[in-house]
Length: 426
Ligand code: PGA
Ligand code: ZN
Image (cartoon, rainbow, N blue to C red):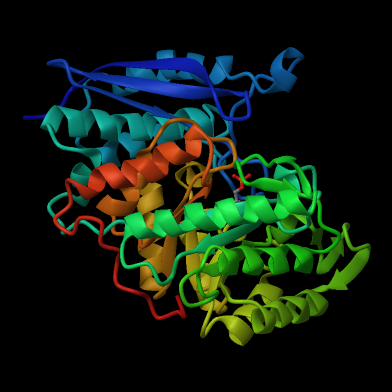
């Protein structure tokens, strides 16, 4: 029986940075309901779907009254009567209705919240959890391997550090629960080391420590130390992963490390990162060079990609065409999958398919501005995405996602099991 959409309602709610964002609720004839909230980035790629914001004085111009109005009026009328189980038809309708390449007319925020809310409603109408609805009869994936932020920098911490995310991956953990346990211990050890050296400046946007270091290498040294203090072997039990978010550091092949007062060319950046790979137990590097430096990203992938995940975020923007083009020139070997970068679930799945076609790994990711919405955890499991990145191991907009994984373990045939390891060192 089709899950006919009866009503689509938008609502302004608040994200983890205290900014307005769009929630959408979809009601199905017969009583089923689905709800989802759009997240928001701070270090956004220029190729991302554009959020519709009101401008003006209120809330720094970030209000979403127009986006919510569009959900209630145009989007609601267009989707009423459609079958919520036909996600592709729903998303096609949303894309046509918006009619702009960047989704700026109705807003990427309105579109992704609607697209995800429809999936939740269809799952509810069917009486199954979202991951199962998304898996659609295919075997679901196992729980994803967590990639968890310990220090935040860059655009998420007033640039007190150049590198945006210093993260850990519990590569030696036998299951999802153990990966969380180990990360909790490393987080505590890092906090104690920072406090003892009087280096905590505050909390970064994704909940990690916002530390005071003079150089990026000091942060890496302390992280290795924290892994050891927590009783783990760096690289074997717990490894490091970095999001350089290099688009924030420069354009046109010129980069500035403000903390260290250094100006670097693309070649210098590559040499610096390769030096870090030799010195530290790093298993993944995201956006190693800026989104406009595809030659640099390809060169870095050639040099490092056999043993390390070279992850594309701003560079590929969850866009299947960009992923195929990047794969053609050998730039990156792993796709960061952020549904709101592209604007609908169907296009997000197409991005994942493009990554798979290229032989890449995939990491589903939250944004720096988040909420209690846990849709991405269900995407990871339903679509078999092997890694999950949602920020730190503090604050409920992050913990809601990690905890959702623990809940899903009870529903999965594989329980807490992690996916098969990929072809990289992790
Ligand atoms: P953003 O950061 O959500 O601010 O874009 C997350 C990331 O760069 O991975
Ligand atoms: Zn990133």
